[in-house]
Length: 262
Image (spheres, rainbow, N blue to C red):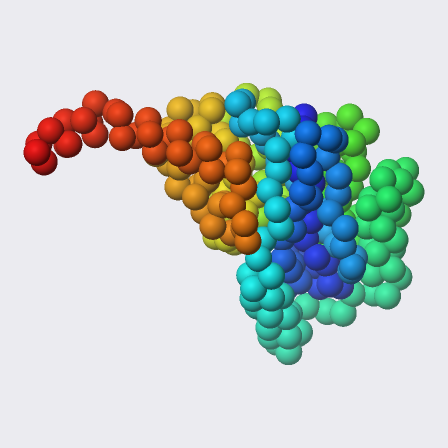
């Protein structure tokens, strides 16, 4: 499956809870070549491969969201983390766990999947209530073709945090690939219920509604929400939006409405 690899910046709180520690979304920008992971300056929680629309250009992906939205997301996450810590809701992450997580993410960035697996597997056993490592381990397993193991890790992440946007979106991708479209839609919508601005959930839900469920009007809304999150429009998604708007304008209902207005 072709598509982008997205990432969430991970503070130590990201091990414990998405709401307390997840920061801004970034996307790898690549053309027709194989997808590459985005360069990052800080340890990041790797997120999901993006599903591609049937008529998309090979490996078409989007540029990174605008920095203003990133700063807003970082500020909100920091405020939530501080509030949670002040209320005694979130305990400090053990230093060894944070170090193992950082090493695992660095290994994933370097595409050293075995090293990442060796770091993550003990981490999820010792700290099963940290959703971030479960999500990353799922991606390592997917890279190795271990779909069943990946799905189990995503389910464990969702046991720890049922609304986790990254885990729900990745689960939605797997469900969509298995032909379970209603369950995939529910997973994407859970992601958006937690984070209404989560770009990958909008993108993948748009693809599902457009290509698989033939609900173009709804798909259009999610493509537009995805496009609005970017600093520069994605040309491929822009074409899809134009196509859906054109089809909506040429529908029987639209033609009747136009006739009535004349």
